[in-house]
Image (cartoon, rainbow, N blue to C red; front, side, top):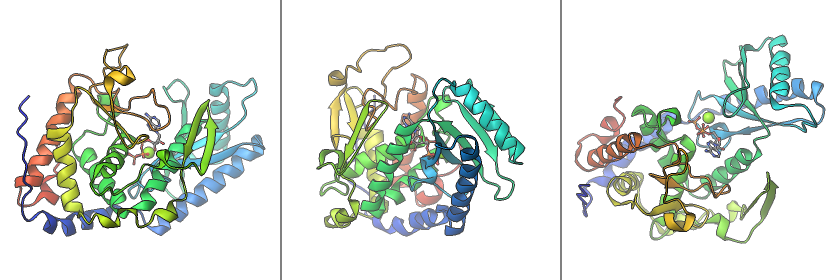
Length: 335
Ligand code: ATP
Ligand code: MG
């Protein structure tokens, strides 16, 4: 593969920052929207506990991990003791309850890989997916949110990267490209690698938060208010970080051997993880370790066709960041 490495970044790179920050600002959800989401969750929880008094609802995903843009759907997890009742039965029951309460477009997708109930709240217009007992997602949501508190550049970078990925059609797991969750992990890893580092590795620090879910131990330092100045010694601008991020994934990442791991704050080899062979549909063409489910490669959705699409998009983005007079427009042009 043609590895045309560039060593020098364009001289005006920092001057691109304001245009990217104004895109970031246009994407952040308003306080009003956040309040609406909270009200919807509370009203759903009221309906749920009428039927299952011990059940709880948790927000997870982008509406709770601080990487959500405005007007996005909300992800909800129903935590409930099943004792004997099957997931499809509970979800079907839940759908009946919601339907009878005038929520709209209620659908129970009980045969999906992750079974969910979908609905739309006619009062707020918010759409919502409810899954069941997916508590690891609730915990990884907290981890992402905690990282976002440490340095504001993470949220800015991740918003722009997600916006780029959506505009370019490379944020579609059913078509073999990466999830939003995977892109946020890539951003965290990237900021852990800057020198001086912009983010620490919370899972390598003394654990102040500890839960075990589905037999997975989740431990990390979560007193992030104590880390507010962590990235202060590095003053790289968003323009520069975007340039470096795309340059990294276009021209410098070792796709053949490396696994990125925010859990360890660095890299692991594919050999060490035994991710060198194709097993079933897992090809490990781009390897992103889940911070808690460590056997889980978030790149596993990528196949031999979509890896090409993805890498070409990284190269396009890197080239735009280097040569285009107007990167904050060109980067997001629809494909
Ligand atoms: P978007 O703004 O695009 O909706 P999102 O943050 O909600 O982004 P998704 O990729 O839809 O991202 O995932 C929602 C949540 O589900 C994630 O925040 C994460 O908690 C969890 N999740 C998604 N994919 C995985 C996965 N493969 N393994 C573990 N958890 C995952
Ligand atoms: Mg989501």
